Image 1 (cartoon, rainbow, N blue to C red):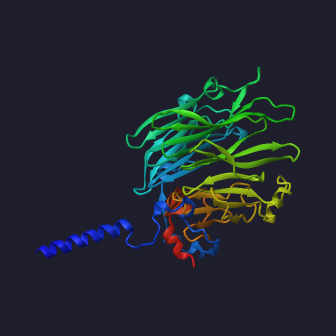
Image 2 (spheres, helix red, strand yellow):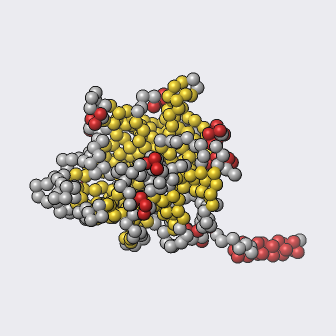
Image 3 (cartoon, rainbow, N blue to C red):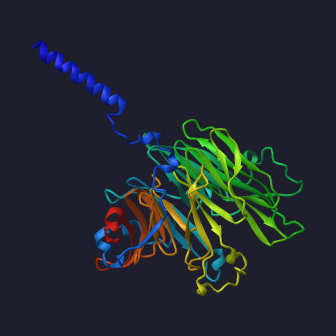
Length: 446
């Protein structure tokens, strides 16, 4: 009996020792892997899927929401997270004979894609002059949305946050044209000149909400343009409601045009009008949450629209030299020449650098990185649809995937896109969501 107890004690000691020492395993713990090395850094390989139009029912599910969306004529936003999709949709009312006076009225639909139900509709606040309800973000704890009056350059707006644990809604910040004290405090505004405040841009990240506001004069100057006064990015603590300005730029002919956020950085594009070159000079800057320092990340003057991934990589658009030499306003789109490339690289290292070139002017001059999955594993590009699987660094052309109006990753294995079916179950023009299973889709890639 004593022998067995001693033997058991020896085995226990050996077990504890091997556990603490790693048991001889040489695999590096996940938490010790540098963020930029979580996914593959091998050169990109390319593949083309089979014609997905022949197998669509094998990897997609169509969810019909026509009973809620049957009369809509405008869909402007889709954000997904987990089992919830936030859809901005509504109607456009156009006075007869005056198309420029058309007014967009939209609501926000909160859709559970697991139960196939619209669980909430947040309607535009007509009493306060609002015409749109636009979603800005959703995560485990929060939903942030905006009510606005559809004025692009001088809007009234209010941001709201829903606490998903208590289901309570509260106001974050509001702006009224007759009271701009919050946004104009500390600004040097010329006498006898009014101001314009552009529609905000916003991003929800963790327990913080970030939004961008630009201020301009309402009178053109001697150069025939509206000179900007300032651009600011604010950080809102959703737990406390505290608001602070973290980026502030005073530039007469320049400003912030886009930004992105992750745990460590805020990346933004600063564009300035170059009258000599007759173009906007655009570069990307990084704000570090750790020390509050701002560094210039690119220096070519042709980089814009940054997207940060969770693992500290950045994707941005860079105009190609041949595109800069063209008169974009009259360029023949049918020629199909590439206008820019998407650059993918780590933030904290100069290499590796991957590039994905667009295949031509087909839908205008917009960013070709459509969305990134939550972990950063998948990046979806447009022109044509291509999916970069960063686990293997394979760029897959999704041949035959129908062109969607709006797309969003719900998680790393689910892609959601809004679509109108001309025919479905014997009915015409059915509104709904396609739910794409990424793992099933990848089965049709050689």
